[in-house]
Image (cartoon, rainbow, N blue to C red; front, side, top):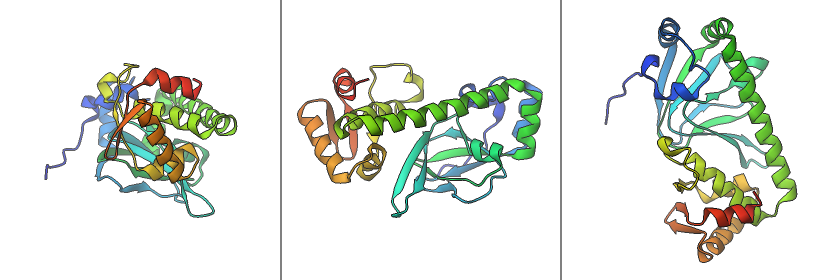
Length: 237
């Protein structure tokens, strides 16, 4: 097994996509000496709902899902976290407990920054605070869009919309801006049904329909988009 190498903030590839991109060398050294990097295997939990945050998490590499448990005990995925993005920012700023679980979708490296160090950095760089407000605003917009989609679109439309969304999530980092590029979406059908807001059996049936319509191809657990324009039309995007 490969040895885990603690990453340096000065060489962090994900920093350009984070709110810490504007930090200068001296402050990067401070951040580096006050962060703890941890490697998580696929399926491990980073934090649990109900726990009180003591700092902030930043994803270096991998993918993470944030999810809640409903009254019936079923998992509800609320969002995905990609490299450079922060976890637990709302709970930390609001001084509240986490409302969701953070679980890795693949092997991931996560950096933790204690709240004292985090606020020391944000106080010195007002632009970071602006970035955090922008991030929170984006999360609110995504939640509103999700509610609108659930209320106004049929299941077939929502599935097409979420396949397009997941395609962007699973794209390699170096081709994120390539609209037509497709990726292999590797997500349990139960999770996909959870995101769409329907039964697993319904998702399986609709995926079969999409395959027959040559909108997607299916290779085992992998879903590959074949007709992005066609999916956009179905999703009414």
